[in-house]
Image (cartoon, rainbow, N blue to C red; front, top):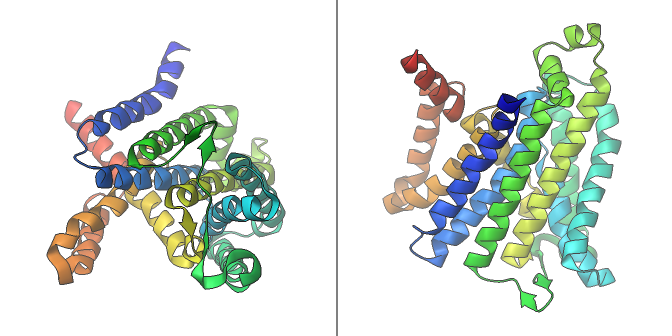
Length: 314
């Protein structure tokens, strides 16, 4: 029991130390903002990694749930006068309901059929957001009211650094505990073989739907947080390229690794910022480095490095 509890606390503890430690070495508010973007993306990627890395289900339309959360904190305060925090919760519930309704039919599919179905869902959400200009502002986007907690108007890189970092750590703690629970063991079983999992009594359809809903809630909360940080949101948040970016973060950091989700998000957010120094060659170098990562670290950055370190110790 003691070992199980230590395993559950290890990743959140590492991430907590990372958030606290980085704050004291950040030279300016710009770097705090970049770090906040990393924490937000990491939160969405942790949820997607539960679906892909642990349950073995592919989603190419997860940015759709991200967009649902983002536009909830923009539309609900403007149209109904709801507090942004309440709107965030409503958006998460809406994403969960949408995932439940959509997941029941499409999770019966497998492989590339499932990938195409989720892609279609993401495109549908993107089109609705882009076309319903009377509600969403259309392609131009819409403003998002600032978050106010009591007398405190949340603004500035420092405040959002701590809020987004705390959300990411809490999200990692929930994910680690879920993975270590009977539900997590069922997810790993159906990842290895749905047939074998069904034989030993795992309700495959039920657990697929559970993890799909959970991952949608993660994405929605991340989307709401990004909208509140930026104070503005556009349909690109729910776009296909954003879905691909989230999947790339999962694969790059390491499928089936909560810590890898954070690393993958950090690499894909920070690396383009670093490569701007190379001007016209930044996209070329980014593509080359991503290829090098996947060739040299085939299981993802964190699992590959962990395996190499364990091999050296042995």
